[in-house]
Amino acid sequence: MTLRLSWLVMIGMTACSPYAFQQEVTSFSTSVDQLSDAVTSGYTNLASDRAAKNEFELTSTRAKVFVAASCGVPITKDNQPCELFRSGLPEPTAMRAQELAGRALEVVSVLKNYARALAAVTNSADRTAFDAAVMQLSGSVANLAQTANAAAPGAGAIAPAAVKLAGWVVGTALDQARFDSLKRGVNFAAEPVRTIAGTLRKGLEDISSARQTVLVAEADLMAKRLGPSLDDSSYQQQLTQAEATVSVLDALRYSDPAGTADSLKTAHDALVAAVNDPNRSYASLLKAVSDFSEKAAALKAAFSASSPASAGL
Image (cartoon, rainbow, N blue to C red; front, side):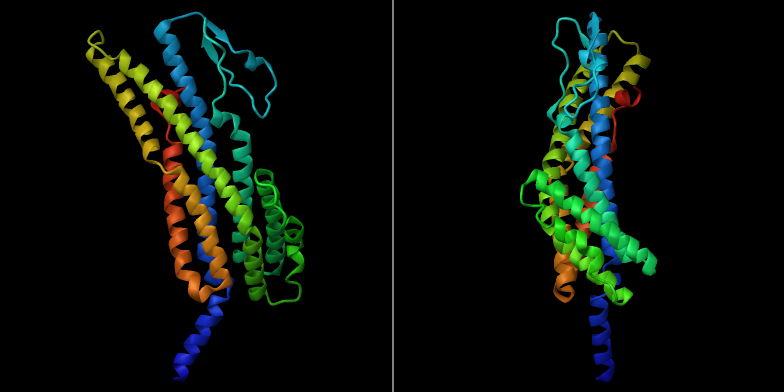
């Protein structure tokens, strides 16, 4: 009986320790990094996809070509693409996903800094590292709230309180301090993360949709070049290139940008619930973090893949 009680006491103590959440917080942070990589590579590949499609269009018609006027003006937030275009056609314009790129990149960067700050707190090995991590978390929660407020006014109302993170734990034991900072940090960030997840959901869907639109047009142009006029070697080479482009397109079709953004929100909500009541919510946290990890990795793979033609530009 005494042994059983001892185990129960140990389990209860562990449940209130940040080390019970160290692996999950680290996994959450890694998954946010993958989500950030997906956004960055998605925009990069979208520009490359457009350039490849444009090249196929121009070489197919061998028309007179002009340089877009946007190439000669400074970059702005809604910058139009610097591209070549065919005589007789209007100048190229940015797709919706490209127009909103600056905002999406800012949002995912703020989210990444927040997730890394959570990991820094749970992984801090001594008082010096912990103090630095708390300051990092304090600033990142404030930035998170302000960014969310820009998307949905009112979501950033907690920013002033969040800045006081560093003062919460003075004089407490290090292990308890780590847990207290983690708990208060994720609770303050709960609503901003939900708002940001919604913003990312739309941004990720826009990237996927835009790339699919361009790749369909690119694959169609590549397919039209295939025919009996080509020798065997040229036909095989161009067919392989077209097949690889369709493969990238198909991976984007099966990717789940909306589900990935939703799993981000679910994982963070589960983290909030677990630190507030570890005994009841820890199992849900494990599943939510695992689901987010799988979806973020899959989305990164789909968004990072480039078509052979665009990769060669």
